[in-house]
Length: 228
Image (cartoon, rainbow, N blue to C red):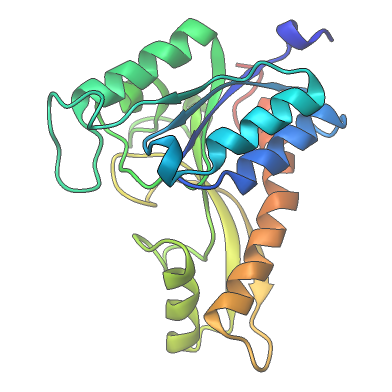
């Protein structure tokens, strides 16, 4: 299948983009028959390494993946609570995704709550089947035990509560943080001597291996999203 005819994935990210890089490699080495058509970051280049990372990958593979800054600063109308998208921001992302012909929106380290047009167009609502959603989030912890947490704070919670394991969890995106139906959870056991950082590093390693496989499953006929 030619590159332009492959299903297009939109990635939403906020930071360095290491998970996005792992997925782009997977699209280029044959593990996932898809292409990254769009990346959106809410932070500027001086605060997010994903811009430079994707520029390097574009050069390495001869790609032309755009990284757009869309945020509450660039699109301030319809403000939400702290950590939420503005309605204008949400509408702008939904417009870019639609214009690119995106089959699936993937949150990879995106630190904002989804709302508005983007949620309506791609997210999950309680009356829907999970297969009807076209937006997923990768969460570096077990759910519901670590709902609403992010990064190393998740592993701190796991160790403080004595849960005995962390996880890499992929779920569909709903109106509430980390509440959408779970597609797949991969257990990452706690080992003696673990610190929040050592546990987080192992979860991230699992994420980079598992997320491309989950996205491939979502895009395949008979998968969570059928062939949409």
